[in-house]
Length: 141
Image 1 (tube, rainbow, N blue to C red):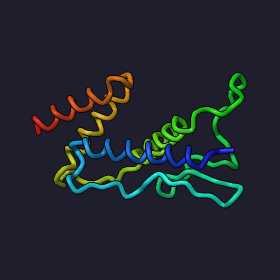
Image 2 (tube, rainbow, N blue to C red):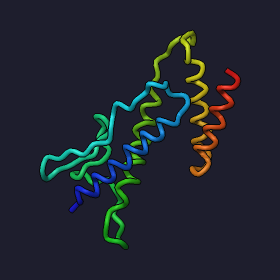
Image 3 (cartoon, rainbow, N blue to C red):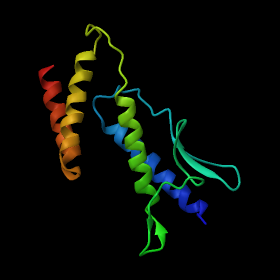
Image 4 (tube, rainbow, N blue to C red):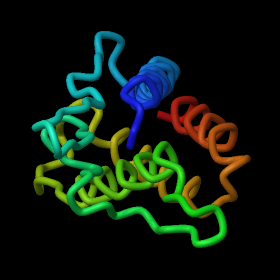
């Protein structure tokens, strides 16, 4: 049985991490605020965790791997983060074909390139490297 307190703490941690990350990104408008949040919903015997309208995990179709040695499922926080990243990567594939005359369009493509470069790098250097790439882009734009 899942502890509601534990799920509550997971959601608080995830929402805080998203808020902290979006606050430090220099390429997001100053008035940007996350409209979607990680939420937990239940129908009694069935529960799920969503980001916005996207279900990232649900108890009915437990998608986490079962560990025979520990006799429990994999870490829920890690699973939610991976499911969220997969969802965001799917969204990033959808783009409108627009002319590059809009303010910021050129920067958007450059930031996409920075994302692609940092995604290739090891996780422990991604954030720092991404910020360096962003600094270079801003300097020359």
